[in-house]
Figure (tube, rainbow, N blue to C red):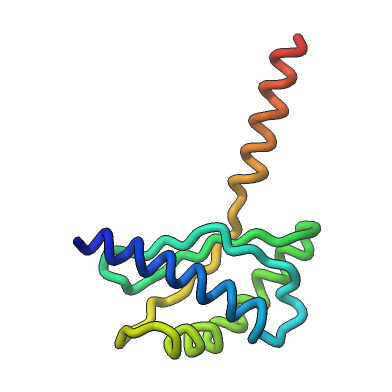
Length: 114
């Protein structure tokens, strides 16, 4: 039961946080960010937010720092939209699954060409 609640909360956080970042966050340094996944712990105390930035590694680093600085604002805006007493702590993580997938694809192509 707690797992289903955590999954539902994760989907709600993903949707609401995406909207807040896109329309309400005033920090230009965040840039073009996509939230790819949110995973909430079973006790609902923490939410790992997986993000992807468009651009170079410098852009990624600056964007992640900007999100870290904006954590308080994001959490308070999220609290207004969620019907919970305590909003989970937000932990931002770079989602590198796309890069890993591309690398695996390159390796498979090299093997096929040999």
